[in-house]
Length: 447
Ligand SMILES: Cc1cc2nc3c(=O)[nH]c(=O)nc-3n(C[C@H](O)[C@H](O)[C@H](O)COP(=O)(O)O)c2cc1C
Image (tube, rainbow, N blue to C red; front, side, top):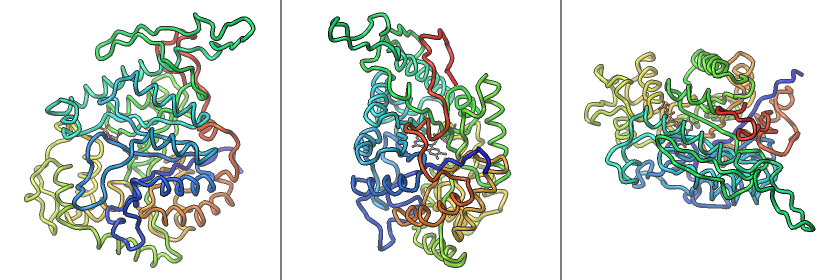
């Protein structure tokens, strides 16, 4: 058995990642609001020895509540509850750098790291879309470039705040009446373009030093940002070749940023649809696709492509004159992925919404447990992935099936752990605890 081990993250998404999963007779329509439903998923993933679970988020209504269950519990709040329900699994919350202040968010995330005993991660997003901006006193979203610039400064401030208490600050000497060494708890005195923050944080350095930093934007600016800050990267890639190219590109950028490429894990998303036979899996996939309401899916696609819905005909290909990626100020890389995919495979709008309904641009693998395990192994061993973001089409049944049928195969093949070796999320991902920037005088991020 080689020393390199696969990493698995569970991407939780109410009744499942397939757009129509909520319409199956077995679905729990209050899954997105239910602590018990999340506890079940967390416990199944932990019993299967997943590295982590992950909650997506945006400070805006996502999806049409008239057509599907919508809305979700704020992730850091939910993770605090799940920290009590689990012992080992890592827990990653999404939070926006465009619609938070660094002090509040750094404090919230460090709080989860303390409460969970070092199991917290932060999926850093810049939040695409004007609708979110209109919840924060803006008429439209800040430019894509501006959002990433702000994100960069946000991370600079957040990491300094997390490091404002040295690890050896607290001496807790009751006899001498000294709790902390004063000059080991330091102001950060940050004054920049977007933020002025005195510090220190009102919270001691957390078990992991700071929460694990995760990133999921794949535009040029997104990849450069990831190379500077991320310790794990989520990505949606449609083919093996594109996943390999993305993997090589990210590792090259990480080296160029002066960091160790083994300290940045690339985790592409896959949507497994499992059956005892391949035919059974394909039937489940087809059944889900039949349940997608086409007019709703077309409206969503039109919004993403920034065209009017009446320009999309179900049985024709996409119009030739779509906007260029340069003009997209929202989610650039997802836009390009979808347009390239549709053009390359000459998909009609109906075929495209079927593919997107399954995983919003992530790859669906329908097959038997052995077939899905083979694909995972092939990606892992051929320069495409350090692990996977597992996005079951239907929850909880798709996780139950993956945990009980695919995970044992990966374990038998020596690709995946049978027991947790460490305690923190960084232990599971095999990543070092970051040094303290304020002690090293380092202006960049530790890797
Ligand atoms: C697996 C995965 C999960 C994501 N989760 C979120 C999320 O929770 N909230 C969000 O605003 N964006 C999320 N995104 C979108 C990215 O953060 C980013 O906005 C998008 O990929 C476009 O990035 P770009 O503008 O750099 O191309 C996610 C992307 C991926 C691949």
